[in-house]
Amino acid sequence: MTPSARRFAGFIAAIAILIILCLIFPRVLAFTELAARELRYLWWLIAIAALGIYLSFFAGRKKD
Image (cartoon, rainbow, N blue to C red; front, side, top):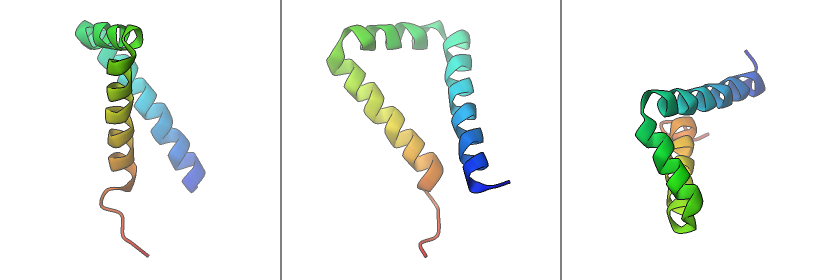
């Protein structure tokens, strides 16, 4: 599997997990709706999601 295909598969998996979480936990969907209405909450949600994505892809990676 090429690195670009692996990255694309990870992106699709992250989107699928988000959708599944919204279906299983309606409170997650309610929180994201609230965050979309209140911009100050949305920035925190984006920051937490970006940190999670960064850690999932780059944490534990060897430095060359």
